[in-house]
Image (cartoon, rainbow, N blue to C red; front, side, top):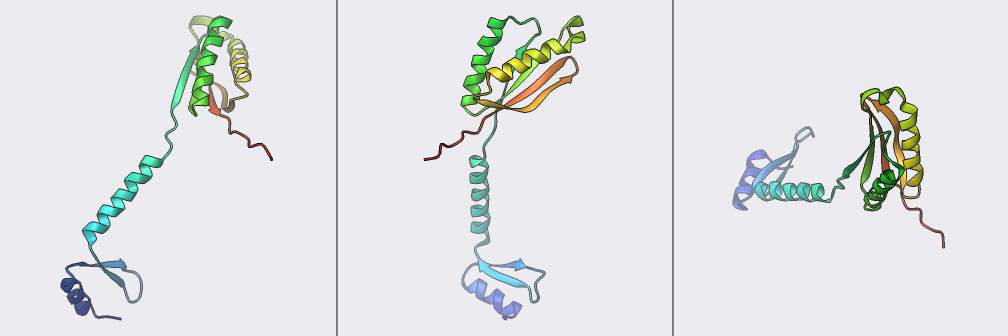
Length: 148
C-alpha cells in the first residue's frame, strides 16, 4: 500500500496519470497510466465493435389481394434473393376500399408466399392485421449442417 502523495510523485516522475480504478475498494485501487491513450484505445475498441455488429436490413414486398399470381411469383423471386443474402423480408398486403372485409383472401395469399419461400425462410412473425394492411415477416432460415 502506497500513500496518495507517494503515488502522485511516482506518476509525475513517469510523466503519466494516476487513475483511480476501484474507488469502492478498501483501500481504493489506483493505477499509473497514460489516461489519454487509455481513452483513445477504449473508443477505438467501441468503434470496432459497432463496425462488426450485424445490421439486419428489412426489405418489403407490397402486394394486394387482387395481385395476379404471375406478379406475386415475380415478387417472391425477389424475396428469395434477399433472403439468400441474409436480409429479412416484410410482406405487406395492402387493402383498398372494401377489400378489407375479406381478410381471409389476403391470409391465404400470405400463406402461399410463406410456403413458396419455406426452403430459404422461416416465418418470424405470422400474418397480423394492422390498420389497412396485413403484415408478415420472414427471416432467413438457418442452414443446417450435414453430418459427416
